[in-house]
Length: 264
Image 1: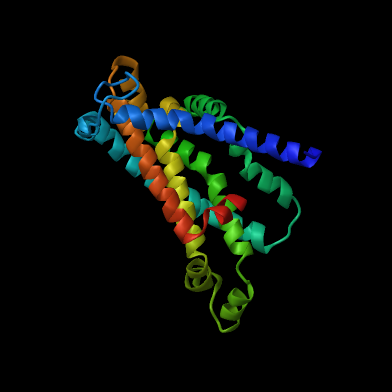
Image 2: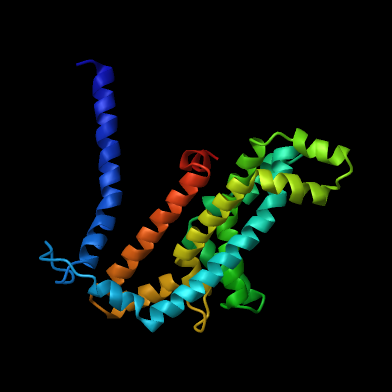
């Protein structure tokens, strides 16, 4: 066996081990969610009672409503801000372009917990503290880098001569944006909106720091439930969120291709 074969086998073993490490907790959660004996493993049957209890809980339904509104609003705001930034990065060269790109990507470089604490301290100092506006701003800041990367990749794959042709026949920049640019990059835009919504929906650190008591997102409600309840309802709800996220990933893959989105 050559040294190349040994290196390939070792790399595959490490890769499969990491995949198993990541998938194992998800698999256990899915098994517990349909196990009649709650957290006792191995399972001794199959039941959907935990799912019915999770989806009939007023607390969880209220949290889902909050996360739905918050996710949609944050995704729209993040993409509305990311679009002009992506156009500038993809279409023009200017001094400090690399520095601005780095600043836009900063939320990806800072641990989310530290970013959440920093946002909380900032909003407390300016007189807001936790509340709906800080929560929405925090989510938008957290997901905006993903929107910038996806939209920039979509614009780089789009021939700018179409925009030039539209302007040559009298269309202004705004008309060109809505009549040419956005329709052409709609696949990337939909993918960006979907991914940003998923990230906002599943976000816990920013929500736990900035969410007001009357506007609690689902991840915070789920965390509070787990602290005081020891049944499989939480596992059922978590399994539902995992399955919904998987469906959303399939949608992104059908629309734009996961490889294209991740490569961006």
